[in-house]
Length: 476
Image (cartoon, rainbow, N blue to C red; front, side, top):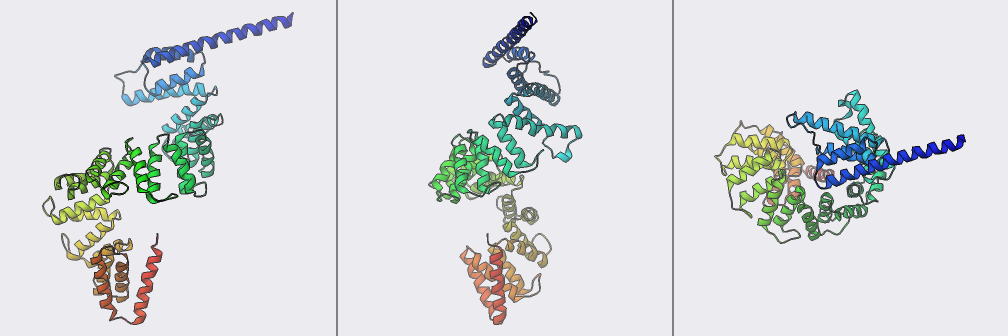
């Protein structure tokens, strides 16, 4: 009798649970239908009803509604930042409820939300924040262990960046591969980059191209761009500018600014495509309009020389200033040159020096050499041969032939440095070897041969040894 009553009781409990599940699912489906027709208030009502009954998928969807701010109870007059923070707290609450039931999507989403909320380095977080940030890999791993590709990728990124877990490229590769094998484009792209750079795996260009192509074929713009770079450089494939242009264009057509900028360069240089300055200028402008500093610089240069657009110094200066405001050294150098020679503006040595100095301190060899000339000639500031030599040397050490020639002259004449024919010969020899400009090369050879008659064979041998040693130490 007791056994029979127990059986009846278990059956009744099962029916109750089945009824709750059925009712919750029905509410959830009502919410899905309302969301599809754009009635978010109705969707939230039904999702909440199902969520309150413990239906994990409804809890997850309700969390998404709060995260994406599609809830009807937003306070229009509340502080925007506070309102958004409260919505994220509500989203976290519902994601957590679903995650604790083992719902993989919610586990992954909760991990992302917690990660995004704690981007500063761990040393900048409070104790409570560190504890919450430490949850991130736990939730990613729970979802990843269920085979959820997004979580596998995110867990890989945690190991790649060393956030909340020790940095471990091998572990990152493992998780990237699991996600990539499921066709997850982000993971395929990252795996391709890891093989390209040899991080966590032996460098393997063929394997890199395989994964980049899989991601590119799914429309991943970064992968398309990187394939373009691969073909342009002939890295792991036969160099093919036409193929590079094809991949750059795919990424550029998606609005990827870096691809738009380099596609402009390909048009300007006629690489893989007929030279077309108008098309180059068009692509530069598209990238520039997205804030790409090098595209702004190139657009300035197009206006400066009148390629693809009317020559217009005012327009060129505008774009150079926009690029310079982002710290573009080439644009700073051009603004220096424009002010030095009075192109489109009144000649102003002080303004020229300001821009040359900025670019020179960023390591631009053209600006370093130009600044050296200003010190050498005493234009806009007191003549200072020692300072001139310092800047010539910085540019010369970067392989800039003009600066190497000038540095040789400083040693030959004892300006800013003690007179030293061995050093002078060495720098003339270096300039002669590295100059692409015939005039610079001929000047370097002329001065090298001129001082050679005043040197012993031992001194010449020493100078040539130093030149060769410099070449070997600066080989890429």
